[in-house]
Image (cartoon, one colour):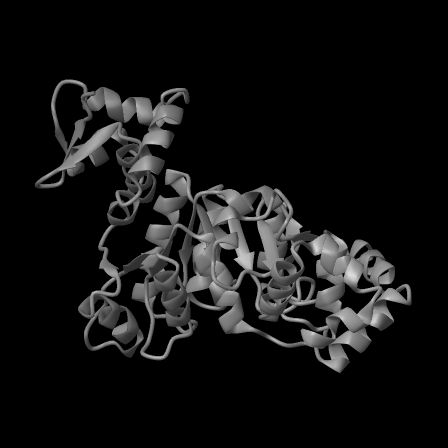
Length: 359
């Protein structure tokens, strides 16, 4: 029952405590009925929480709260809603209420999180773009925290490639932090993506970065860290991902770079799989690949894909010959080759040769 969760949230009761109450009383409906008999709650809640609930029940505060959300264009979803993320629901401490703007169906999509250093190097920036682009083109939804650096770069590249991304905010849904990413947040929604958070829109500004990171890990099939320093906040996301049994991927960086200490340590301590190209991530999800290959057979090839397959019809071709014969710029050709390899249309061979995949 959504009103029970909203009331408890407005009363300042944590998601963990809310779920304990639901378990104790047997259902959220039973919890809601207990609000009219506050003495029943005395053994499980403190006086301040009971007083807050009583105040909400005896006033129009809940209705005013819902109306206020409508006025600012914010929606909400509770843990008992059928649209709530099945993956997120399984974690130790799932949020009972999520506030959102955008396509809520993305909560149950095949998603990969990309997180990392706020102050990243050119190397981290380029690797993030390469991986975000390829994962997007493979059909994954990109999840991140809309932070400066790696997060924002990954989400911008995803949108640029026509993909969908979920931004998990550390603050209030209508008060984007950092402010420089307000335009990016608007673009995410405009392009069919999703903004979510668990912070009450009526609360004073506060930023729960660690709490935000547990949601990022919970929503995702796996977490990719392109670049992270020794004390990067993204490593909290990795810790949560490890606890939840998610795949963890790290891109190795220069040993002399302080921005790669975190990622290199993940690899060194066997906490993350070392990945040097997007397919290293994608091949870890064979079920996803099989599903998307079936879908791909129903999709008509564009002119450039037909051109490349035609060149590979009789024999393998070196990359340099493909550059020459297609007349495509390197960026476009590389993107096409990566996408076609992911879709199982072509195979990259030793010596930078490409061959048509034979079923």
